Picture 1 (spheres, rainbow, N blue to C red):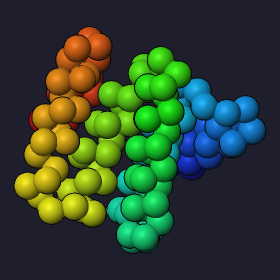
Picture 2: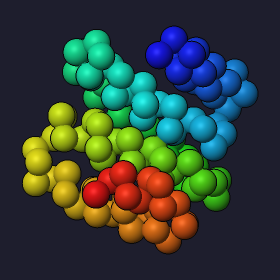
Picture 3: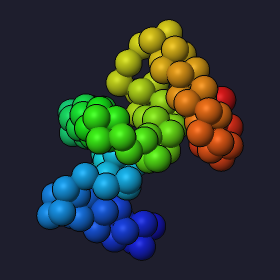
Picture 4: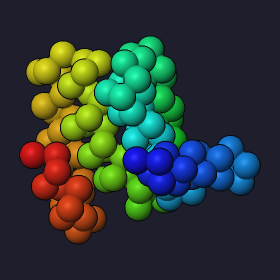
Length: 113
């Protein structure tokens, strides 16, 4: 667990220092899940989830979508069900699954279902 936190904070630090990269959105999505589940801080978890959505939009505008299926998987399975009504999460999960399958990311595709 300590190594995971170390790697996660380093990825977020790289994003702050050097700008957007492929690990930016997945790192923020994972941090959102940790805020919600490990720390019970719903407000910060929601803010990190919103930041993840902003980073995914920035990645799309730059043509970098390699980290998006991973971020979507984390958001749709670990974050969205806790901060949104269940019915609204289903379309997001389906969309995440389809995107991962289109990119050939079977690992993240099957984690969302």
